Length: 152
Image (cartoon, rainbow, N blue to C red; front, side, top):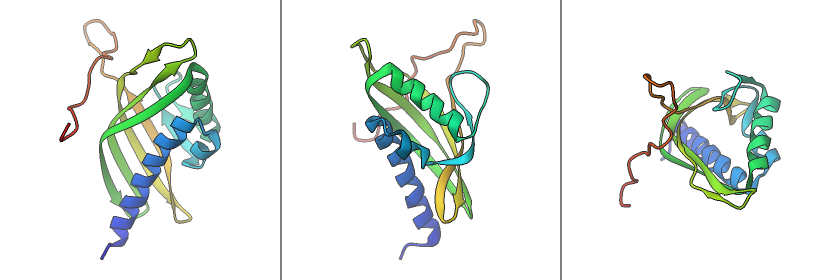
């Protein structure tokens, strides 16, 4: 029999899957529902932090403006759940066809999500996306890939 903890973990994983589905569909309203209204986002683009769901939605609108079609893949997602908060981490990649017709495989980023249970629903209260950088040059290292999925 599934415990409350197991059910919460399943619900959160469903939210992460929904994130990928909503991005593929460019469904801004669906995405909005995944985030806490006071989400704090440390996204890949400036500034250092984006505060609130409107700022997060602006980031996604910017991404939608670059792509005709897009996909979001999450790999090696690990989740820890405790009470009304949880965190997960893994690797994410946004890819697709750009508005100019060029296909892009995108780049893998490190992704961390903080979740909070609000009125029984798990929402993203914090996210952070980053890429490693070469300390000697200050340049981002964008050609790294996570290990291939098991069975691939």
